[in-house]
Length: 379
Ligand SMILES: [Zn+2]
Image (cartoon, rainbow, N blue to C red; front, side):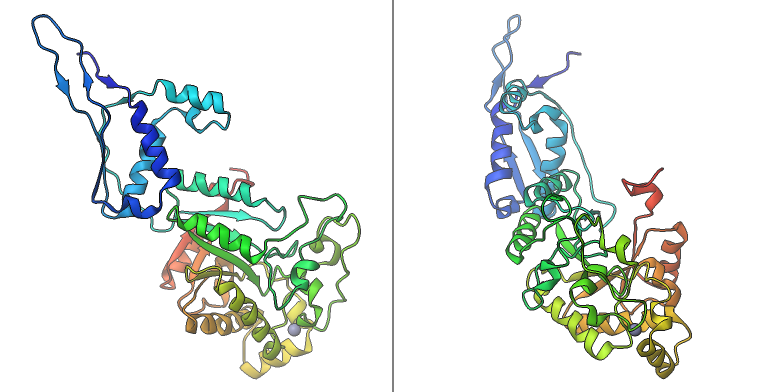
């Protein structure tokens, strides 16, 4: 039997117009009929021309479901339609054919995330939007934006400007473009809005108590009282962490460090409105807290067994305050050994057993085991 094709030239333009220029509300129809012009089949022996209506029909349980249906349709088109070159793009649209097909699909996992590290290297807003477009195409729904680390602090905090004026510039200011810079609050809002238009939540990551060298470069008073002072960035220095050794926020000075952290989150909460914050909790450098008189005193006062339990106490304090503000926290799984703060989502990354431990602790778990899904790890 001859396979039937039609040329939905007009149709695809309509679809992409919808995608690019209309608000998400337009997808809120129960069914979106996309009807091309009727195509006449060639008259055959003794038969009158037959008028046949062909349509692409996408139905979803909600607007997001219809949006994903449109992504499936895009995936069926030639890759050249995504070409940035105008001529190639036009040519790709000149002879589009799609086979008759029926697809029924539903997402299997509720957290389909993509993490972008903007600390070790910074990306432009346009580049981040490209990543978000690709996420939408693959029906991902969580953009995990890693914004602070030892190497840099990338998020503008108006109350604490040194976080970015110092922490945002680990490289040589005259040449290391890819290392230097930060995102203004307006730019971060732009990214959040762009993601939301594509049904993607934004979960920013602000690491505590470890991975904070950039923070401590700017505000060293929040570090422990032993371990040597951090050096300011020097010309040509490639990263804060390699130059100065790793530090942690002082848990023992919690009467000043936790209010400082909460003030930072207070500003960020007006930008990242999805109610989820990643608070890190991984790779806290050993030794900082053991040598610090404030941290040792707190451990003794709270009768905490070791540093892991001190970290759990510290993260619990922060998570509980955030929970009261309507924010749920996510943490890397390796701090599981000291117990997981109440209500926290566990993100497993280092060992397959971490995911299991999180489940056994009764927590929701994000499985991002590095050997399988990190792009910078060997398979
Ligand atoms: Zn300390």
